[in-house]
Image 1 (cartoon, helix red, strand yellow):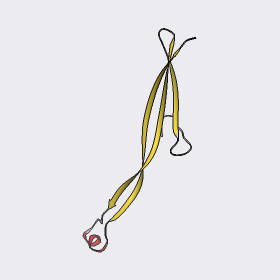
Image 2: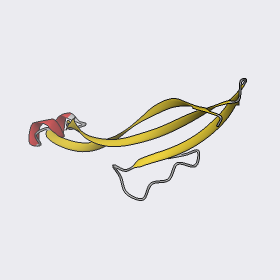
Image 3: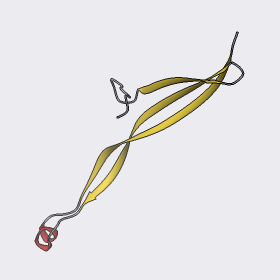
Image 4: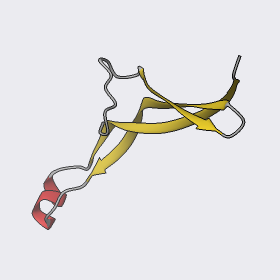
Length: 80
């Protein structure tokens, strides 16, 4: 996780807020959220040589893979 996103545990959300002032005294609030999910991926390991292929079977492994999706939400705040 780069660019200042820090979360203590996996599966938590990392949030970042920015506010931009537009003409007409309206304030646009950008809320950027990074969601981290872990999904299992199956991998088949096969023997490298012919001698290994004759004596050892292929092995299936399940590995966790992290996926980061970013969601940007915008809101408009009006000046009081």
